[in-house]
Amino acid sequence: MTDYKSKIYEAAKAVLPELEKGDVAPADAFCDYCVPCFKFAKVYRKSPMVIAQEAAAKLKVDGMTVEALNGYLNFTIAREAVVADVFSSKPGEYKPLSDKTVCIDYSSVNIAKPFHIGHLMTTVIGGALYKMYRALGAYVVGINHLGDFGTQFGGLISAFRRWGSDEKLKERGLDELLELYVRYNKEAENDEEIAKEARAWSNKIESGDPYAVGLFERFKSITLEQAKKVYDRLNIEFDSYLGESFYVDKVAPVEDKLKAKNLLKISDGAEIVELENSEESGEKMPPALIRRSDGASLYIARDLAAAYYRHENYGFDKCLYVVASHQALHFKQLFKVLDLLGEPWAKDMVHVSYGMVSVEGMALSTRHGNVLFLNDVLNAAVEKALTIIEERNPALNDKATVAESVGVGAVVFDALYDGRLKDKNFSLQDALNFDGETGPYVQYTYARCKSVLAKAGKSGGKFDNKELTDDAAYEVAKLIADFDDVVYNAAVKYEPSFVSRRLVKICQAFNRFYNADRIMCGGSLQSARLALTSRVAETLKYGLSLILLDAPERM
Image 1 (cartoon, one colour):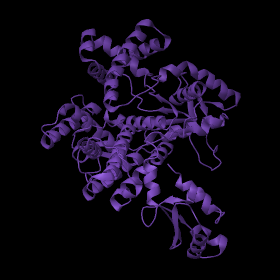
Image 2 (image 1 turned 180 degrees about the horizontal axis):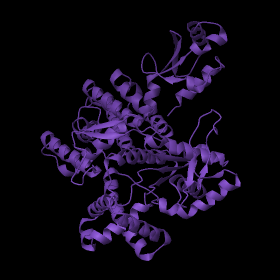
Image 3 (image 1 turned 135 degrees about the vertical axis):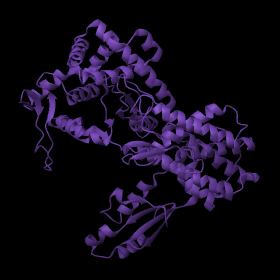
Image 4 (image 1 turned 90 degrees about the vertical axis):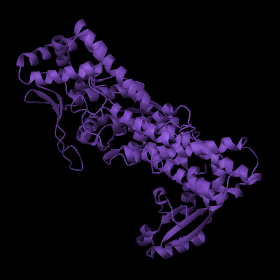
């Protein structure tokens, strides 16, 4: 695809030397791109209107018209050029990040705990970014940083030995572990002996006691077996499952680095790194607690060890942490400590934060108490999707498979449709609206495209790009011509909603085109309209895959 933004920038900068590339912005009304001239008023001591008029008189950009309007330079691309871009390459061929390595830390489930609704956002945001970066050519490392370290696991062993059995564990799996964990916490509140026993088992895990480690590994295996079933439903993949426990023995080298830089201090017997007044901006942060007075390493210490491990093993250009916004202070501290250590790659660490998620119309509890399993939400969505599909298309083959794709896709799309920092209140009814700005709407439009192409049979044939420059066709062409740029911006700005929202716009435009322009009209015009329909289908399928959704060919 032609890089129109760069083309405009290069031409306009010759006339307005103070122009920056960010000044060239896409526009939805009046034109395709615009340059506001208000910032140049002080430089040239002229009104923005005059500046725009004088610049427009001097500017000539091949394939575009340039006009001045109310202090803006408006650039309109020739419609034939945009249509040509639509067919110049296929979705997914754009690989601008082929020389980059990106690590993405997301999902991070806790051992012996259920995959609950709170894991939805980190899992799908991270999973979508994984697919986008890989599609753009980057080498991507998906990391599930397991929560597999802490005294709670000693408590779980204690609970299993007191109240559990191999038979129950084999039969009930994660449900049994959760029940034991809840019972342990309740009993330990009033029985110090149980808490003491739990600490002893925790120490045995850390010291490598074969029985304790073997039992804990069994708990871990059960947890991951259940989690992977959810990941399969969500089209999520990982390359590493190294958890906290892996980095415990790697904390000491980090402490040596801190000592060498005279950064490690002792406060009431604990090891800390002072961060107050360390920011040039004057921002103050509480100290980073590296090790408690009892000798136990803290979470940030293990995260520091993990950061070094990832940089040493992957040589990343970016390391993303997809973690809820309430952990912002932790990551500010983590990145600042690395900065104080003089690591040049500290600037490449990014906290990709997000808001909270709740579920409308579903009680925030299940048979397990105060936990809402993500699987429960997915199952409810699939059940409702099946009901809708049976009403809309009772003759559809394999309705259960389609309902799975539509129901799960509805949950994921809803999570990825708004900006990630916005709190989500998930509603099954809204998410499964086939006529709204939803996953089912995009999937249904894709199925409509495939139906049109199937009825047409052979969709080849020569045509002139001018045949796709009427308003309805051009609106579609314009939205898919720069889809690669949308994907790129979604990746580098860590915002999958850019892709979700563009997919909805493409569907809305295609459905207007479908109703306004008769596709099966014969001759080269039919070939042109079928070619555009085919490219829409390819773009929708590609885009849906980037945000973890399937693309059913019939619905």
